[in-house]
Length: 161
Image (cartoon, rainbow, N blue to C red; front, side, top):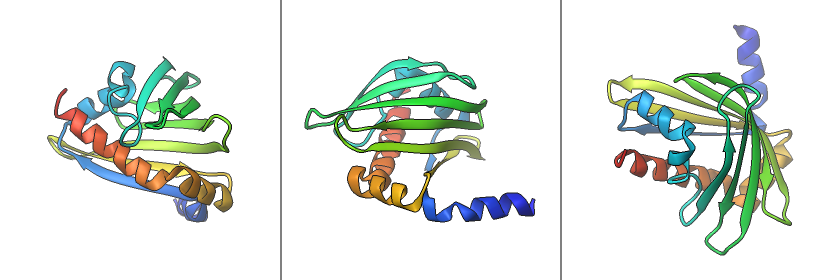
Protein backbone atom coordinates (compact mmCIF):
# COMPACT_ATOMS: atom_id res chain seq x y z
CA UNK A 1 0.00 0.00 0.00
CA UNK A 2 2.78 2.44 0.84
CA UNK A 3 4.48 1.67 -2.47
CA UNK A 4 1.33 2.50 -4.45
CA UNK A 5 0.94 5.79 -2.60
CA UNK A 6 4.60 6.60 -3.22
CA UNK A 7 4.20 5.90 -6.94
CA UNK A 8 1.06 8.05 -7.18
CA UNK A 9 2.78 10.92 -5.38
CA UNK A 10 5.83 10.70 -7.61
CA UNK A 11 3.71 11.48 -10.70
CA UNK A 12 2.03 14.61 -9.25
CA UNK A 13 4.34 16.99 -11.13
CA UNK A 14 3.43 15.41 -14.48
CA UNK A 15 -0.27 14.71 -14.20
CA UNK A 16 -3.63 16.40 -14.69
CA UNK A 17 -6.58 15.30 -12.56
CA UNK A 18 -10.13 16.48 -13.31
CA UNK A 19 -13.18 15.39 -11.32
CA UNK A 20 -16.91 15.99 -11.72
CA UNK A 21 -20.05 14.57 -10.12
CA UNK A 22 -22.88 13.71 -12.53
CA UNK A 23 -26.59 13.45 -11.76
CA UNK A 24 -26.76 10.03 -13.40
CA UNK A 25 -26.28 6.40 -12.36
CA UNK A 26 -22.85 4.89 -12.98
CA UNK A 27 -24.09 2.46 -15.63
CA UNK A 28 -25.49 5.33 -17.71
CA UNK A 29 -22.26 7.33 -17.45
CA UNK A 30 -20.32 4.19 -18.42
CA UNK A 31 -22.56 3.71 -21.47
CA UNK A 32 -22.02 7.34 -22.54
CA UNK A 33 -18.24 6.85 -22.28
CA UNK A 34 -17.95 3.46 -23.98
CA UNK A 35 -20.51 3.57 -26.79
CA UNK A 36 -19.31 5.53 -29.86
CA UNK A 37 -22.88 6.52 -30.79
CA UNK A 38 -22.93 8.49 -27.51
CA UNK A 39 -19.30 9.64 -27.45
CA UNK A 40 -19.72 11.64 -30.67
CA UNK A 41 -22.37 13.77 -28.96
CA UNK A 42 -20.19 15.15 -26.14
CA UNK A 43 -16.47 14.40 -26.61
CA UNK A 44 -14.22 17.45 -26.78
CA UNK A 45 -14.28 21.04 -25.57
CA UNK A 46 -17.03 23.54 -26.43
CA UNK A 47 -17.41 24.08 -30.16
CA UNK A 48 -15.74 20.78 -31.12
CA UNK A 49 -17.29 17.85 -32.93
CA UNK A 50 -15.90 14.34 -33.01
CA UNK A 51 -15.77 11.54 -35.55
CA UNK A 52 -15.12 8.10 -34.04
CA UNK A 53 -13.36 5.88 -36.59
CA UNK A 54 -12.93 2.87 -34.28
CA UNK A 55 -13.74 2.16 -30.64
CA UNK A 56 -13.00 -1.38 -29.44
CA UNK A 57 -13.49 -1.14 -25.67
CA UNK A 58 -11.40 -4.07 -24.40
CA UNK A 59 -7.78 -4.41 -23.22
CA UNK A 60 -5.65 -4.05 -26.35
CA UNK A 61 -8.55 -2.51 -28.28
CA UNK A 62 -8.00 0.60 -30.39
CA UNK A 63 -9.87 3.88 -30.09
CA UNK A 64 -9.36 6.17 -33.10
CA UNK A 65 -11.14 9.48 -33.34
CA UNK A 66 -10.75 12.89 -34.92
CA UNK A 67 -11.75 15.98 -32.99
CA UNK A 68 -12.77 18.84 -35.27
CA UNK A 69 -12.09 22.29 -33.83
CA UNK A 70 -14.45 25.22 -34.37
CA UNK A 71 -11.79 26.80 -36.62
CA UNK A 72 -11.70 23.70 -38.86
CA UNK A 73 -8.49 22.26 -37.38
CA UNK A 74 -8.46 18.47 -37.06
CA UNK A 75 -7.00 16.70 -34.05
CA UNK A 76 -6.49 12.99 -34.85
CA UNK A 77 -6.19 10.76 -31.79
CA UNK A 78 -5.34 7.12 -31.32
CA UNK A 79 -5.53 5.37 -27.98
CA UNK A 80 -5.07 1.78 -26.92
CA UNK A 81 -7.19 0.52 -24.04
CA UNK A 82 -5.00 -1.03 -21.36
CA UNK A 83 -7.61 -1.87 -18.71
CA UNK A 84 -11.40 -2.16 -18.69
CA UNK A 85 -13.20 -2.84 -15.40
CA UNK A 86 -16.89 -2.41 -16.24
CA UNK A 87 -18.42 -0.12 -14.95
CA UNK A 88 -15.72 1.22 -12.63
CA UNK A 89 -12.53 2.04 -14.55
CA UNK A 90 -11.09 2.57 -18.03
CA UNK A 91 -7.38 3.04 -18.71
CA UNK A 92 -5.77 3.80 -22.03
CA UNK A 93 -2.52 4.91 -23.60
CA UNK A 94 -3.20 8.06 -25.62
CA UNK A 95 -1.47 9.54 -28.63
CA UNK A 96 -2.65 12.44 -30.73
CA UNK A 97 -2.46 16.16 -31.31
CA UNK A 98 -3.17 18.84 -33.87
CA UNK A 99 -2.34 18.11 -37.51
CA UNK A 100 1.05 19.73 -38.00
CA UNK A 101 1.30 20.56 -34.28
CA UNK A 102 2.95 19.00 -31.25
CA UNK A 103 1.85 15.53 -30.20
CA UNK A 104 0.16 14.63 -26.94
CA UNK A 105 1.23 11.40 -25.28
CA UNK A 106 -0.13 10.30 -21.90
CA UNK A 107 -1.60 7.46 -19.89
CA UNK A 108 -5.23 8.10 -18.88
CA UNK A 109 -7.45 6.48 -16.28
CA UNK A 110 -11.12 7.31 -15.90
CA UNK A 111 -12.82 6.09 -12.71
CA UNK A 112 -16.58 5.94 -12.21
CA UNK A 113 -17.52 5.99 -8.52
CA UNK A 114 -21.03 5.78 -7.09
CA UNK A 115 -21.71 8.78 -4.86
CA UNK A 116 -25.43 8.09 -4.37
CA UNK A 117 -27.93 5.91 -6.25
CA UNK A 118 -28.22 8.38 -9.13
CA UNK A 119 -24.94 10.28 -8.77
CA UNK A 120 -21.59 9.27 -10.21
CA UNK A 121 -18.20 10.85 -9.68
CA UNK A 122 -15.89 10.65 -12.68
CA UNK A 123 -12.20 11.27 -12.15
CA UNK A 124 -9.87 11.63 -15.11
CA UNK A 125 -6.18 11.17 -14.37
CA UNK A 126 -3.70 11.81 -17.17
CA UNK A 127 -0.03 11.06 -16.53
CA UNK A 128 2.50 12.53 -18.97
CA UNK A 129 6.06 11.35 -19.65
CA UNK A 130 7.47 14.53 -18.07
CA UNK A 131 6.49 17.77 -16.38
CA UNK A 132 7.50 19.63 -19.55
CA UNK A 133 5.20 17.43 -21.66
CA UNK A 134 2.28 18.10 -19.31
CA UNK A 135 2.97 21.83 -19.23
CA UNK A 136 3.18 21.99 -23.04
CA UNK A 137 -0.22 20.26 -23.40
CA UNK A 138 -1.77 22.64 -20.86
CA UNK A 139 -0.36 25.66 -22.71
CA UNK A 140 -0.75 24.48 -26.34
CA UNK A 141 -4.09 22.68 -26.06
CA UNK A 142 -5.70 24.14 -22.93
CA UNK A 143 -5.98 20.62 -21.55
CA UNK A 144 -7.36 21.51 -18.13
CA UNK A 145 -10.09 23.85 -19.34
CA UNK A 146 -10.79 21.55 -22.30
CA UNK A 147 -11.22 18.61 -19.93
CA UNK A 148 -13.64 20.58 -17.77
CA UNK A 149 -15.63 21.63 -20.84
CA UNK A 150 -15.73 18.04 -22.10
CA UNK A 151 -17.15 16.83 -18.78
CA UNK A 152 -19.68 19.69 -18.82
CA UNK A 153 -20.79 18.56 -22.28
CA UNK A 154 -21.10 14.99 -20.94
CA UNK A 155 -23.26 16.25 -18.05
CA UNK A 156 -25.57 18.00 -20.51
CA UNK A 157 -25.72 14.96 -22.80
CA UNK A 158 -26.56 12.61 -19.90
CA UNK A 159 -29.80 14.54 -19.30
CA UNK A 160 -30.89 13.55 -22.84
CA UNK A 161 -30.05 9.84 -22.61
